Length: 273
Image (cartoon, rainbow, N blue to C red; front, side):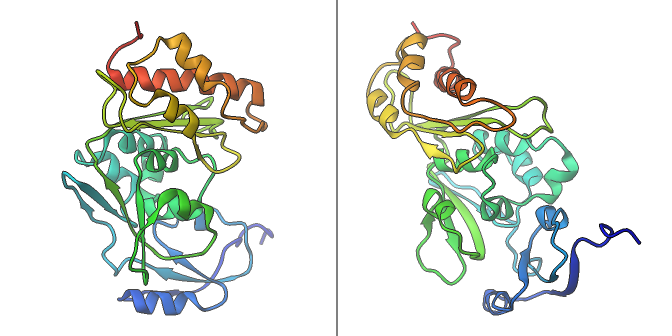
């Protein structure tokens, strides 16, 4: 048998019926939570592994509302794409996982817990001001704080306040299945007649997504500037890291372009006056 044949050595699968049982099981060395299993199935670890299935915890629901949209941790990307009450930008981000098979496996909680730097979903959640609910903790955690923490918490749900906000996600990649080189997400309460409650997020797909706070402040309360001005103002704040897919110069240039594209898309216009 080839040495690579059994890369993931699962010794036991536990199926807890309560959060308390799940958290207790997670204290066992070599254990991991199992949602859709997308990334665990791709693991290159040959160490013994105890999987803690979340299938009995009822975490796959989507609860829409005018003030909050709450998405369970094991809701699949495909379920998110198909649900009309989920904000459009998040549905678009989930659809960027190009294979329907993978969308049916990949879960929102797994994506957030993995904190993958080339995720298209996480920048949208940051732009939408999402909050993460953790088993055993009373207070939810802002998504940007959560992705900075490396604890292996059990995610219960992700809540999006004010799901009616405008939102856009744009990415740079060679194909739908290629690793992404850049992600820009934006959301706002309004763009016309003035920009209000703007959030701009960029990810160079090397480091965690970051907000372009200075640019948000400069644009807040203004009418939509001309495209050339948007691009000029977007050029100085973000310093992307290069990788094998793109140079830092190219990523910086595309960040300017995508920020302008995002604002124009949210305004419903192809160009600003």
